[in-house]
Length: 226
Image (cartoon, rainbow, N blue to C red):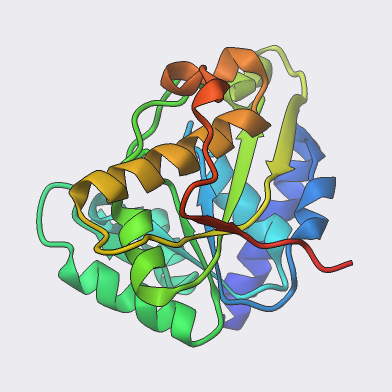
C-alpha cells in the first residue's frame, strides 16, 4: 500500500469511528497471520471499509464486483487495496486463480457468499463460490457477521451514531468424503450460511432462520489457539 492509500485508509478508520459506535472486540479472535478465508454477510457499502480497516495490520484482500472499477474514488481504492474483481454473471476462472494465489501467499481473503447486497440486513441465499475456493485451497473459512450498519442512512440524517457490531464464529474446513459434487457444494454452502445465521440476532437470519439445519457431517472445525 502506497503512502496516499495509507493516509486515506487511516482517515476512513477515523471517520467510521466518528459516525459509528463500533464493537469489534470479537475480531481479536482472528489470528494476525493467514491464510484464512473470511466469509461475511453483505448488507451495504459500510462493511467493506469497516472490515478492512478493523482487521489491519493483517494482509487483507477482498473480492469486489467488477463494476467497482468503473472509475473514480472506488476504482482507486480497490486498486490500492489490491481487491480482486469478479464478474457475477460471467467468467470466474481468473477470480478463482487470483484467490488461490492470495491464499498461497498467506493472506486473508474476504468474500461475501451472498454475492450481492441483502439490503435489509437479512441473509439471502448463499452462492457456492467461497466453497469452491476453500475446497481447492484447503484453507479454513472463518464466519464473520456484522449488524446495525443497515441503519446508517437514517442515523446520519438524524445526526446519530450507528451501532455496528461484529461477531466471529468457529473456523472450519469443508472435508468431503468422496467427490465434492454439486450437491455437496450446496450442502457446504448452506452450512456456512447457517453458521453465519447462528452469529446473528434472530431478526437478521433471513432464509437461514432454522438453526436446526446446522450439521457437522464432513465439517472439520478448527479450534482457536489460546
